[in-house]
Amino acid sequence: MSARRVLMPALIAAVVLGGCKSGGGFDMKNVDLGNVVKSVGNLREVKEPEEIQIGQSMTETLLGARPLYDDPELQRYVNEVGMWVARQSERPNLPWHFGINDSDHINAFATPGGYIIITKGMMKQLRNEAELAGVLGHEVAHVNQKHHLKALRKSAFASLLGEGVAAATDSKHAELVQKLAGPTKELYARGLDKSDEFEADRMGVVLAARAGYDPYGLPAVLTTLASADPKDNYLTLLYKTHPLPQARLDQLAPGLATLDSIKAPQNAPRFQQYTKKLHVASQ
Ligand SMILES: [Zn+2]
Image (tube, rainbow, N blue to C red; front, side, top):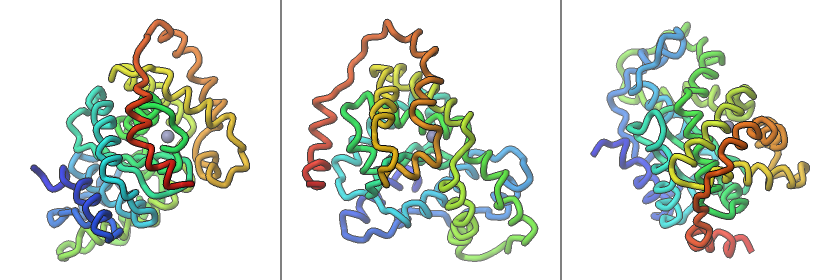
């Protein structure tokens, strides 16, 4: 088993043990930082191991701001659902990792290489497993289509090339995290192109359907969000980084019409069982 595959359990262990610092489970001694920076900066095709290194580093920065939510059972459940959805994608063999972070903001995001975070706030908006599968499917689609990698190439990260990367240090991973921290924060505050979001919605619906779920899971979540108070502070970032929920529903409508005949489960009781504590904790 590779170090990458044990990343999420290691992070969960760190949370359970009371230490919320992210990244405890990383083993990044063999990072060729020069190569990673050149790949992104030179617009050459980023190889999969580099893509995963970039994603790990970005995830560390994002989890550094908001660590994982302390509920190992719920984390395991979200990983199982996410893994099943990701297996239906074009990149089933990426080292996929799914986690809930301890944030009340309503959001979900992905980093390159298969790292997907859904916020506690978003989990509380969901009513069943089909909705969870739809949200995770949207994020899996971002990874498959390399939307964040493409956005990074356009960002300030490309300019780092000019600085020349020191070859041999013991802390190449730390260096990569540090170099990516600024562009990561900027990218996740600004969001992706609207067209990437619409594409991820379409693909997310298909992935959830392929995984055997009611394809209306993601549209149902968007409907919930469309009826929420847009002034809700916890929606600010989602609204800033994504097209409005109603616009996303409008874009999805023609494709959804073709899925009308699919009658697939939503698994509401199982979802509610696992998320019960989430709601109790917030009261
Ligand atoms: Zn998105």
